[in-house]
Length: 159
Image (cartoon, rainbow, N blue to C red; front, side):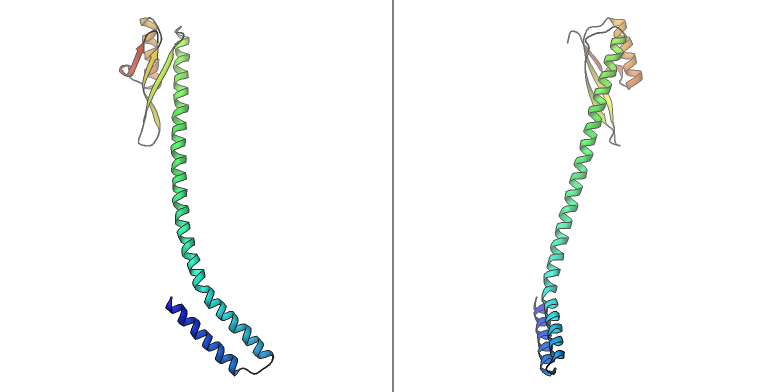
């Protein structure tokens, strides 16, 4: 800050000396305008630098906000992907059950998230009654088409 004050003092001294030595008339008026412009620019310079510092601070805040919003968007997209997958898989199982003559089946699924962020079905709970053969056929289809091991398929009659 003291450097700014010294610069303003030096410019004021230079301006005063220039105006003192300048002859009266149009030349002095032009020199007065130039000295006023120089002093104004020198006085505004620290204010402009302060605003640049504030702008840099706000720029950092905005970058952090952008990162949070981007991360929230990624998380929302992943949850949406999981929800869509869950509905599609449950619908597929119900359609397969219906094709086998198993009616009124209720499906609950669990998923696991892979390292790449994608979701895959990991287990299923089936609520409803079915005879042994139809149950095995549906279990085979769930295993073959969705990759859920038979050990991870739980049946609950009359659920």
